[in-house]
Image 1 (spheres, rainbow over the protein chains, first blue to last red):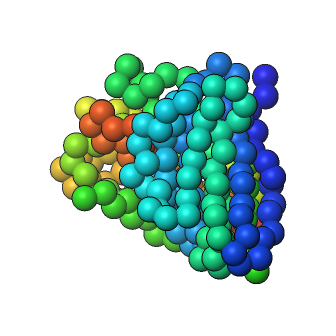
Image 2 (cartoon, rainbow over the protein chains, first blue to last red):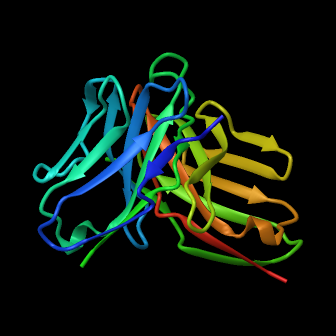
Amino acid sequence: NAGVMQNPRHLVRRRGQEARLRCSPMKGHSHVYWYRQLPEEGLKFMVYLQKENIIDESGMPKERFSAEFPKEGPSILRIQQVVRGDSAAYFCASSLTSPGTGFTGELFFGEGSRLTVL
Amino acid sequence: GEDVEQSLFLSVREGDSSVINCTYTDSSSTYLYWYKQEPGAGLQLLTYIFSNMDMKQDQRLTVLLNKKDKHLSLRIADTQTGDSAIYFCAERTGGGNKLTFGTGTQLKVEL
């Protein structure tokens, strides 16, 4: 039973280019969360999605960042016109049940995508 | 507001107990969690505690919650070299759908 799969594991982009990070949740999971980890900082929540819906994007920067979770295929976090400050590890997590329905909070994390902006 | 704080580093000798501390600010937190991150890997849930509990024990792990002081701790008994990792505490508030994580504590176990 495959866990949360993220790719690419490492991505190098030059300033101004676009970065696309993909996340396939665990089998049977329909809830996806993206977090960003900056050096010596904790994980910062970015966005929570269900299939075809963005539920909570309160942690997403207002510009250049977008996320989607289509009916078919992986969730994608897209960063346009990357800047050096976007260099970080981006983690995707998925959960089986939704918050508010006996959800105990267990998120299953992928191994992360490490973005380096030159 | 949401803010979870941890000390950045802890060094212990193999066989000793490790205690990792965490403070949080949101009194409406319902669940609190400890996650472990090994180098180059994602986070794995170690344990969690519901806010109406004071203590939870799971094999070598003991979680203590002081709700009055908003303080959470993780004690690892008989710490082994394989326990070397970054440990994150996290809180879930109310009916919220996101976890707020601390900065993580890097645990180093020395022989």
